[in-house]
Length: 304
Image 1: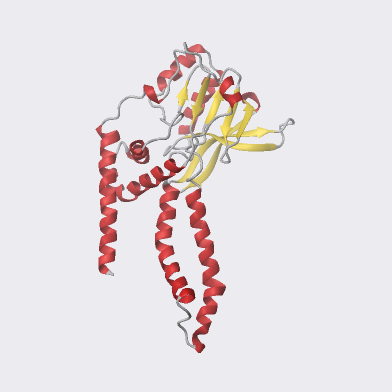
Image 2 (image 1 turned 90 degrees about the vertical axis):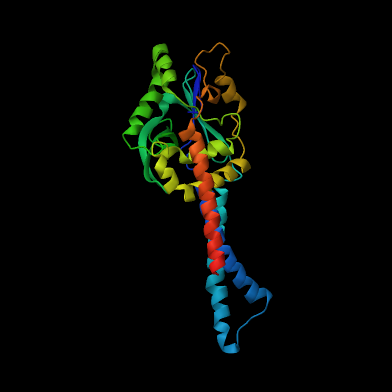
């Protein structure tokens, strides 16, 4: 959840929890690939051809096979990096309870809107690295004859959860849009935490907390996984720092305007304070992971 009120409910997109993984993966790929490719390029092109006449087939192999494959891999690394950087911090979904509309922020920065009563909802399945098979609540925008799918978006996602967990999330969303005032009061009390992202970028500390959040009930796993997770948290910070905060169009903001006397209005300012295991312990493990990573690099360079 991002924010809650009697007028509208705002949810985060399904890719927000794993943001930073693609940055980390692309940087790792670049560190493994770019030095070797640069060495070949410098020695073959800039410093001349270090081959005798009978060895010129090596140069032909370079131009015909190695160079195209290298460009393809480099393009993949850049695409992976750009999939999370220089875009938007998140892609929110807004449920307008009063006007019975649903708005979602596309990855290209545009917004799609549809009537709640005309959407077709179902549970979708996909594979998300490094988690594996995941499920989410999806919605179809249908044509007027309700036979053609015009667009599909992910309405809700249970991070690190099972398929059955989505039913509880769906019931929350359904009651919000279709329930009465009593249900609304109950739902407001059920939300214990709101993401601090609707009017600002998440900071480095919360990025670390979010990265390790799936392991909050198993503190010892923080230490086991601190090496990759610490660098994923750094990648997340890079991604968030380079991205823009999504802004709804004025018409969407006006329709979902919250009155000052709305006693159910909630956002990140109403969050409880993090404890040692939620905040301090992940930061300690991040420092351990970064230190371990640089120590491994030092040992590799020393062996060379």
